[in-house]
Image (tube, rainbow, N blue to C red):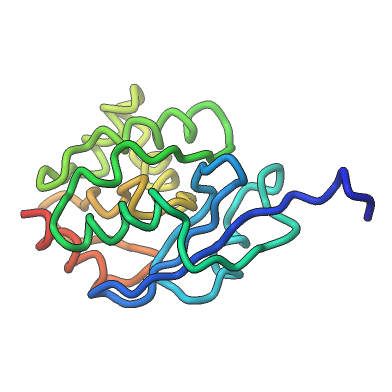
Length: 170
């Protein structure tokens, strides 16, 4: 592999009340993947192939990104809002992820409502797919989407984590 094919990324893990939280970030500081794991491979596997890093550089901190994660878990629910995220997919998923970033903490929506906010009210399954394919958990807060009636539905990082996040945001 020549040097032009290498896509490096930085990775850091911090302790949170839910467990270890790892972020994979591009050299320009955009979050490519994140979640409650200590294993970066769990994150790189869901990053779109065109963005997937070919080299990971372990860091103690990712600066503002790491601080936002710590601040969010400590109670500043808006700390994650200004962090840049980079995800790649088709037009609907990319748009849905942008919409999801605008769902306020403490105001979860149903999958049906999320589909409507994303401009496709009949596309509940597509909205659920946007949550399932989200590589940047927390920064793209798919935990804020619930089933009708308030049931939790799925969450890549487990229902206990989703439950904690929703309670934290109340």
